[in-house]
Length: 164
Image 1 (cartoon, rainbow, N blue to C red):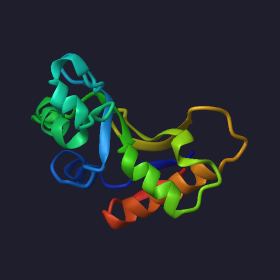
Image 2 (cartoon, rainbow, N blue to C red):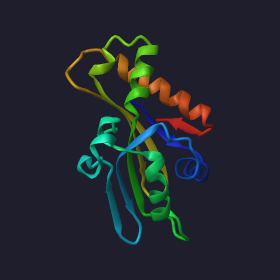
Image 3 (cartoon, rainbow, N blue to C red):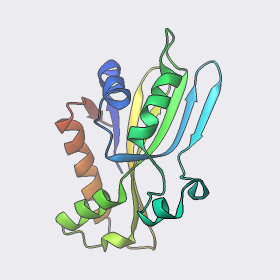
Image 4 (cartoon, rainbow, N blue to C red):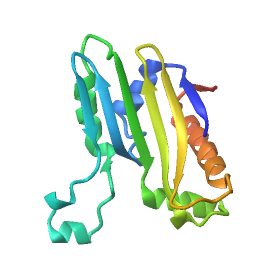
């Protein structure tokens, strides 16, 4: 797990809420504090979908690309939000691909999620990485791979941050 502080909030918010930078992610949860507090549970309601849609395979959470506009609409305005928290997960197929490419010593199917937590407190944004496993493994290699991948992702997207 690493913690990174965003250097340029304006640039980061544009890339988070208006660009495709974070489209490789699913939204697990969002909490946005403005005049009221909005909570979004990103979990897919499987009963909403047809049998055909379910057989095509649905992710466990809503794609960020589908939730991004809603979150933008809740945040935009003349006033800065009091706070927000987003919990994102790398899409499962991309997580498995990453771990396989990096020859992770933990079987990729044992990694439940590679997560990115974004926390804004009214002044600064902090990003933290997290790895969830289905069972216990003493290896920290999935964490190290995810931490490196996140730093590479942020550099590729030209999102300036400082390691804390």
